[in-house]
Each structure stands twice: as C-alpha cells, then as structure tokens.
Image (tube, rainbow, N blue to C red; front, side, top):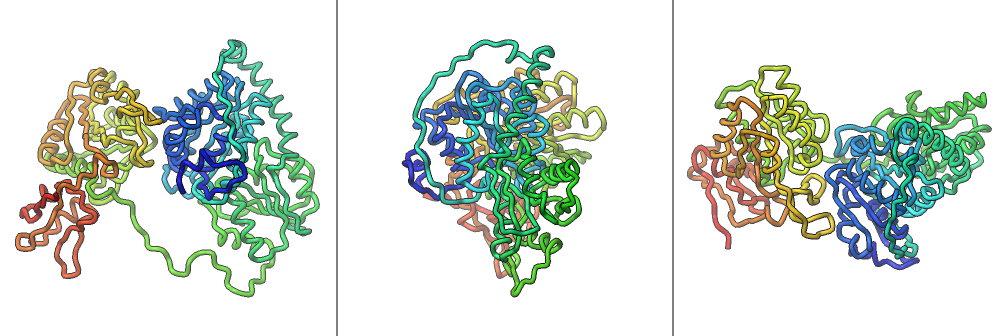
Length: 617
C-alpha cells in the first residue's frame, strides 16, 4: 500500500492498515498538532510513517533524544491547548515516568494521548512489564484497542475524553495489535490548524507540595467521574450467549478468546473491556453476578483478574474466578488460541469432534538473531576481543540496548551485564569501583544521546577506569534506521544541526579519545590495546555506517575464497561468523555474493590470505 493513503484517504474509504499505521490515521482524523517519540519496537512504525506524512498533515513531529524528552514536548503542547500525541514502547514509559506522573496531576488543556506498546513474550525488549500497572499508579484513564480499526477510533475518543476532563489518556497496545493488519474504515481528517497559547496558572502547573496536594484531590474527583463513563462506554462490549460461564478479556487477548469461542461454538458469554481504567466495576458486577464461572483472559499480568476478585469480594458473589492466579492460564508470555483453548477446557467440558490446532503441524525452525553481513559492530567486537586476548586481561563487558546487544552471541560473548538504555556506562562506573578487572562497555550512537551522557559525566568526575566503545553506525539501526541528533537531518527530513559525539566527549574532560574505522582491523586492535592500558576513562568511537543504510551498502568489493590457498581452518567462520560466509556442499569455504557487502574484514583476518577481493563496476 502507498503509505500516503494514510494521509489522503477520504471519509468512508477502507484501507488495509497495520495497527501502527492506523494510529497515525487516528492522529490525522483527531487533528493532532504535535507528536513526538523515541523509536522503540513495537511502536516504531508510528514514527516512521509520521516522519513521512507529518509535514503535509500540518503536524509537527520529532524523534526526541529519549522518551522523557518526547513526553515533555507533547505535554507542553497539550498545556498550550493543542492536541498532542507521544508514543513509545513499554520500557520507554519507565524513562518518561517522572514527568508522566506529574502531568496526570496537572492535567492538560488540549487533548493528549500517550501510547504504550507492550511486548508480551519479549520479542524485542529486556522485560515483559505490563503497563496497565502505570494506569493505576498514575491514576490515568486507559483504553485498550484489539485491532487497527479500534486503534484509530479510540484515538478520537481518547482526545475527546482527555479534553472533557483535562487529563491525558493512556492507550495500551501490544505487539500483536501494533503489528496486525486489518481493514480500517476512515473518517474525515481534521484539517483545522491551531497555534497554542500557554495561559499561566502556577497553582496548577507548578507542582510544589502545596499545589500538588490540591491537584491530587482534583485528580481523584476526575477519576470518580470518569469511572461512571467507563461503566457505560461503548468501548466495552458484551457478547451474550445465554450461558452461566463468562469470559472477561481485553486487547489482543480478546482476539484469541473470540476465535476459540466462535470456532468451537462454546456456550460462553464474553465481556470485552476496551475502556479498562478506571475499571468498570458496575459493568463487571452486572456481567458476573448470575454466572457460575468467569475466566479472565489477559496479557501479561493478572491485573483485571484481581479487579474481578475485588468485585466478587465486595459484593459477596459466589462466582468462581479462573485465570492466571489459579493457573488456569499461564502467568507469563503472550497467548495463542491454543493456550486459551487449553485454559477453557479446564473450566468447561469441551467435546471436540476433531483436532483443533491453531499452530502449524510442522515446527518452525529456530533462527538465532545475528548481526548483518558487513555490520561494523562485528569488526569492532573482533578487534576488541583480539586486543583483550593479546593483553591477557580478565575483562567485564557491560552492554547496552541496540543491535550490538548481539555481542552476547558466540563467538564474541561480549555482553556480560545489561540493564537498560545507557546503563552500560553507569554500571561500568560501579564495576570500576567494585573490582580490579578490566572493563569494556559498549553503547550505540543513538543510545549515547538517549541516556549515555549523564553517566559518562559521572565516570569522568569520579575518576573511574574503563574503556567505553561508542558504536556510531550513523543511525538508530535496531528500530529501523530513524535519525538521531548526531545526523544532519531531523525527524521530518529537514536539515538540522549535527551534534558531534566527539565534541561532547571532549567537553566532558575525557583525556583518551580515539575515532576508528572498525573495518580497519589491525589499526583498531592497536588502538583498543592502548585504551585498555589507559589509567582512566578511555573512549573509542567506532564510526562506520550501518549496512542497511544507503551509505553503508557500497558493494564496490566482492570477497571470494581462493580454494588453492584455503586450508579450511574455519577461522573466518568461527571467529567472525559473518552470515555471508558458509561451508559449501563439498566442504569448502565459500562466500555468498548475494550477502557479501565487501567490508573486507574476512580478508584481513584470514591467516592464509586465502580471501581476496574483486572490484565491481
């Protein structure tokens, strides 16, 4: 599909949209003026699409340096009376949480939606947290779409609710909802353009303790009124089959539940909760009061299940509740129809006339993640490892969030400790003070801007000793190649000042700073050896473009193996593990010309000089 249709599609038109694309259409129909993000899967495509369409939509959009800044950009716009939208993956809300909590107290003047894309089963994240907890911690109204149409429609609903009560709204999606495709019927776009104006109100917008106490009281009153709306909201739906058994579900879990119920013609009533917080207590009570059993189907934590149990206790109902707590359903990971069916079979007698399998009969092969052919990170890891081996050092490798986290894989095994964005530097400070071991930490260019600068300040000030390798591949690679402040272009494709990592590092007082081309292996190795012997913080910037960018893919050279010289030592396979190098059917080593990117690292490390290069025209 031509992505511009997300912008130009007319009222009544139907498009086959990704959930994240539907979110963009929702912002266009709602008349959003300001949008901001730090890219993070499974929300990344929202920013990718907005970066292409925002200018023509009359919207300001930016890739901010981190999620906290992105949140604050949109919060200020909403305080100025504009509709704003900020979005991030679930762990990104941890970064934004400080300002997130306060903004719910202060409220907004223009509508504001915060989209949190959770990642059940941890496909591309460091944890599986359930951000519905944030709804309860912050006391913020929350909606949970289950498909692309609902994402778009709940956008408009959320902005209207936000403005009615002057409160931001949290939208929780999951990987399956963000990445599923579905038919979306469009409404008319809101083309009204506004300029914001911030009306000063210190008692509301400056949260000193005296003001915060009053704003908290007002927030509680708002949520009491919003709960009345959640009980009657059309976002909550009942599918009544006249049964004494019920299911309560939300979001992506609803899709599995309705699939199982309809495919097997199960005698089960379903309450689908789309407006999930404030929890619609009255609606839930009316649904379950005459039931014998209710199964709560949700991903990831038993949040609604505990709310349902609270209703049972409050009204002294006899309905039996099944879900994660009683082990009817798994406590962790995302669900599938098979998992839901197995859970339902524990509660009701299901007589299946034939095998009901939702999973393929043939198991899918397991493919471990790997760095791309020609990836400059592979060359940097190789050079660091050789430098450490030659100096015979006992070394700790704190790592960070990015493609380079794959340094954990064999043969590099150079990811010993990982917490969160930017933590490779902060934890290196701790290891420096706690051990006598050598320390080499890795962080990407975008991650350095995101959260790496404050801990590097800390390291210099506290006289720590470690080597920091900043892997500058000139993009935010892991999430799809979005720009960051180190590039001469912003999130809308406009020319922007390029912030120099080298100058930032110099300004912090780092005394050992070298910039290397990582594909020059021997030179890189010698510089790493010097860095490892430096008494203090040593920074090496490994600068080479990602092979998935236009600048990275040169293909000017094609590597090839000379069978006469190759003694099949497999050094290139065992120590470099480039996917372009493989063992042919006859047992010889060969290089796949379709994968090879001509980086020449394999040629440099071959002990027999059996790998050569052919220049392409």
